[in-house]
Length: 506
Image 1 (cartoon, rainbow, N blue to C red):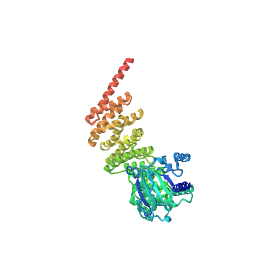
Image 2 (image 1 turned 180 degrees about the vertical axis):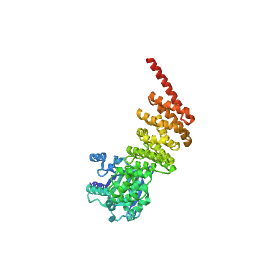
Image 3 (image 1 turned 90 degrees about the horizontal axis):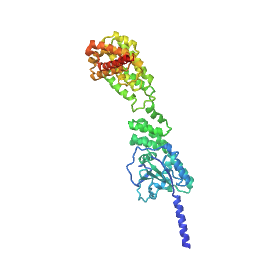
Image 4 (image 1 turned 45 degrees about the vertical axis):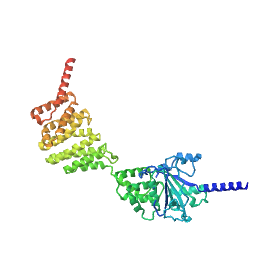
């Protein structure tokens, strides 16, 4: 009986010792070689290499309803928390118990699992276990005082552990677990940064921009204020790639970070003036160099087009700004015609053709056509100008007729009629000059075909007036006149059918 009583007493003492060694545990979604960290690594179910770019979510950490519900129902150890936004039972994770605390190794020296040295109690060494979602496990012995001093997150965990298990649990018996870590490498870097005795920004600079972004997110989640400030200071001072810029945008959309350096970083990304698109257009229109202006036109068109991958609002090209640029360019074209400067007329006409393409892309083509059809002053200046200068205006008219005939611009009947009445005869007259000076055979054939189609969109009496005017020019100028014979034949057949119907109805 005495032996059985002794055995029961030993079992009670053993159970009490096991309970005293309980861990206070959390889980994040986020990688030590510091002089104050003892690392021992064990791989449990080794998975693929850790992705250094995979990050965590801080917002979901603060509210994990599923994990809270499980704790309240007693399905989980109440001291354990799962990763922000993730619910996964503890017993579903393959765990590896760390080896017993080593002895005789001061913080600052690396130890192996077989080390038999003892750690001085004054250092307050705790075992930190990082368990990655890929099954990899990393055991780290850290100075708990430094960990709790630098991170409010770990400080709160330690306080919760004290309240749960009482002050009789020794510092050396504490174990900290971080479960379901997305980016173990980034967490390890942050722990090294936390224990770093040198310049922290210099440490981050050795890691590079990509790792600094991951470290910033981990530091924000665990509320490591000095680490956040150091990462922000480094990122503000260095250039980023386009992919890194996108990752920084995503990071700031997911985390609210209160630091003055945040404004400097966001100012680099979101500090553009609201009329940036209009400024780009004006810069192209005012450019003097022909070859460079063409390159600038192609560049800006790609940036402000409706299919561009770049965000255009609120810093994009507005309707009012684009139409204002068109009107200013028409006014400049009239001024160059009055001066008789062929080079200036050519430049402004080229700008107008480019602006017209922008209006078509922005669904403003009809507004441009209305303004071009109402240019009475330009029409009078065309009459008084030499063919060498005035044929440039017909380039604009040809672009407008092509867009109407190809159905790229859907204008009202009145707008189409006004544009063709005002600018068809000038274009027919200048067509020979356009053919000789521009050498754009394919472009001119498109102008011929689409101009005929544009005329066919009008009522038959309007078609008759315009085709008869063209026929007179075609008989006089020959090859110097655009060939609208295909559309002319369509009009002729329609006219015969209409005449037959009139006779049949009488």
